[in-house]
Length: 485
Image 1 (cartoon, rainbow, N blue to C red):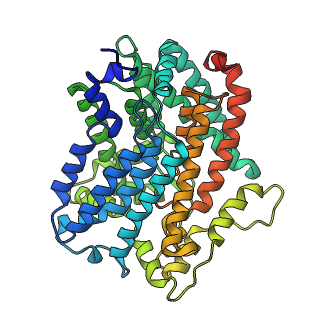
Image 2 (cartoon, rainbow, N blue to C red):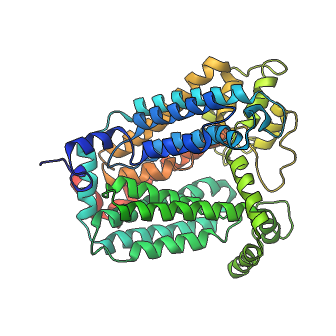
Image 3 (cartoon, helix red, strand yellow):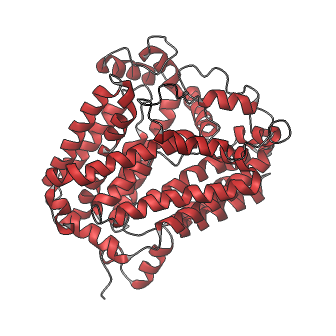
């Protein structure tokens, strides 16, 4: 049977390939499990609507043999917009009683789900149709080079990232480009991981070592942002087209369980840990060395008891939920505050083209001030952190109910176009472009993001990626771009 690669290695028949092209692996079992665990209850109709939106979004955005970054850009905010439904059903309470403060939770959830559909449609239109030749070329590139060569490429990117982070706060005017350059190491991590899973037998242990190093270094920061290493690894697993065997499912399950466990533990200890590493200051800074930070984390973790962990589970579920502020905004706008008629979106669009080096008087972005203004002070002082309304609420404030859907579709179109351009641009076509798109778009999905910050960050990341693709990668790894010259 002559199946197109990469499907040949992952699926046993054309029927399996057809199903795989329709939905991600295990998507339907996961949806059924969600419905079984948290579907029944006072919010049954909302739960059914949420699951239907999830399936439709997966059908629109699943691209076999490619990075699932576009699907993630939809799925993560789906989780944030829907988890309150299933949590409320589990607790046996109405969705309106789930929020810690009064607002229209029902409307916020429904509008969030409608906005997610608009976002998914926009992404699909921007990304264009899936093409089997794209996914085939990705695997061929990964297999064309030995694992040590992919590792060396990642190691060079890691070194550049380290230097960029070291200078990021020394030169304030260049902080954002330096951080964008540092974040692009995830593109090379993705290529290493993708090659590792595609190579199969004889692939060595270089990637597992890199994974553990990235995880260990992430655990010592102010935010302990260990999510990225798990997310990018999952993206590589799905993109590689590895056969969905019992062993693969078990490995993926262990990886997912590890990420969830770390999330719960981090939720339980992060308050006290951040006070310690910042030296008691109300700022996102680190004042102690790495070994001391890890020792403190260890001390906090070993002292956790069952009650603390159960409380952390509830806190994590409520932290993932990001429709409460939106529910309050729906009560306040336009009843007490007018729609801004695109002012928030316009500010987001023009900011990247007003660099602080030239526009020294450009005002700072303060998400917490905006959140307090539209919610009546519910964000508080948020010392040491920034609390945003989220880009769904911002789109509603700008344009109202129906205009919000159009704005979210346009944002999705923008994200999809970034992916398609990098994947198929002559200078980056193939694995390099897909990896760059994955690195650029990984941070855009969460619902708590302010588009004011996200758009600027994406533009800077694209400029840095453009320089990397045209001038740096051809010197580092001419073999990666030789076929397109």
